[in-house]
Length: 450
Ligand code: GAP
Image (tube, rainbow, N blue to C red; front, side, top):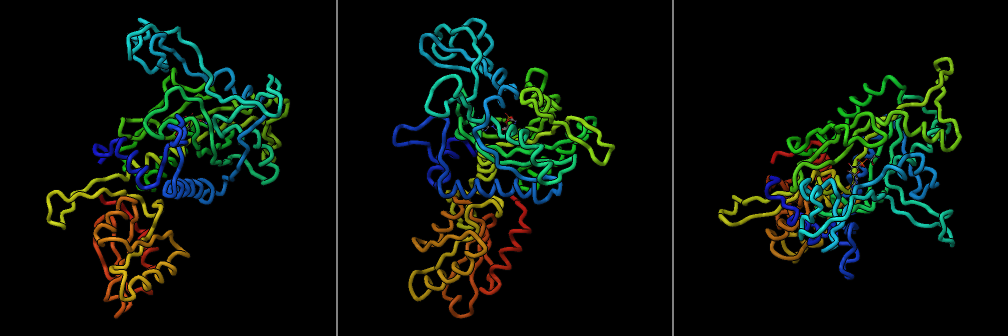
């Protein structure tokens, strides 16, 4: 129910439940940066793990890499980022507001009129999005270094190392998850567009001429991935880049867009980067970046690259929006009894199972703690004995915990517990000894119905 998942509600729930906090909040906050709390880091790790499994474990021809954020500055000249990675910027001379020229109404731009106060706008100028700093003690032009604006280049400069060390043969891919930094002019909509963020990128090296086929193949695979993750598929669509939108390196590009509360926005890009990057690195480094096909008379060529590039932190926002639901709880018989529930896929939920004793007394708490100890080896668990059981269920619903195990007086008699399902709120009685197996089955078979 996207219409109820406003960004304000998502932001406030994320803070209340420890998913995401404003960076440096006690100093008034740092624009463009966010901190991931106890629930947020668990969710982020699980989204990253799902992507990593999909891209490496399930593909024999893709290997992983973790390259440094700081790279030789020539990298960014070769990649074209020093010259081309810019946004058009205008400032208001009266109220000092700053805008991306391509994001304000055309009539304002033409009339040089501030959309906020009506004051005069400056001429449009190009603004490079790379963060620049210095390495070493001297702050001169020789010590300039950049925070990487994409993880991709770390893969390109290592592609020959990986062929040699891991005996990879084309077609093959290299996957990487890591931080990227962009000095974004406009950061709004919570964690959607930030200056510090994480990317999950995979670069697939193919023989020229086969690139279009692989491009389509990767579009299909990335679409199927979100389907498998249980995302609402009617909230996803493709957007092909027009000639004005294509990045300087791309021959063709499609975005997977998600229907966020503020509208359709890019979630992930699939790009045909041609041989642009490797050719430029050949030119700037003087190193031969050609592939030698030993199975084909040592044929030499610069591979084409098909890139799939997803934001990890943007995926987290998508998963939060997608999971968010408010539901009138019918079984209570009260017309105004609502619950907020995060319907995470169980494999992504920060807490998989919460163990709750009906009462603290009569040995129920001890038994519940004992069950939690048994489960925590295999599952991410929580324990809660505070307050009425209904309120405790609501707390777990709001945290997106798919399963609650309740220990009651019958548990003491026959060693069974109640297993409660978050989505349906149904409860079944399960022998304690079968709990772990049952949970594993439920996770594997999970299909979102609401
Ligand atoms: N290597 C190609 C590349 O970086 P991109 O379209 O600029 O392509 C890829 O970025 C993905 O990274 C986007 O689809 C988005 O999910 C994420 N992303 C880009 N800029 C971001 C930002 N400022 N904040 C959060 N995520 C961002």
